[in-house]
Amino acid sequence: MTNLLLVDDDEVDVMTVQRAFKKNNIRNQIYVASNGLEALKMLRGNGQAPVVPLQRRLVLLDLNMPKMGGIEFLRELRSDPQLRATPAIVLTTSNEEIDKMEAYNLNVSGYIVKPVTFDKFVEAIATLNKYWTLIEMP
Image (cartoon, rainbow, N blue to C red; front, side, top):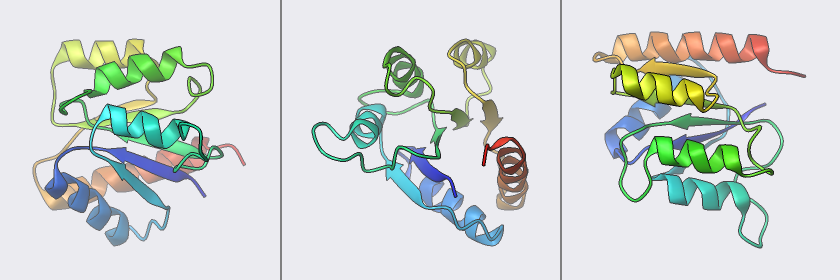
């Protein structure tokens, strides 16, 4: 089972993701960080065991956050030899082409623009789960 790190500063969006997972009967552990700095600390452990277990983890990442945004986080993630292989999928409201290009240049596994309605969001999470289940290595 994959350990998910959701990096998003919007509490409503975090609850929406959690509700969409529940609606899709996805039982993966979801850890939450409110910005890139907090997420890096959770992944690295900083002298302690990482909060998010090393094995089988996936980052779901918003781009627009305080302190350290998603693109900055991805740059740091990819430059860290211990973390660079961690898969990340952008889950954001930004439909800007420059954000998409920059994210893909930083080797994200996918880029999902958050749908406006909850039903569409549930569908997007179901698709994400199917995709991840298919490509995840045993």
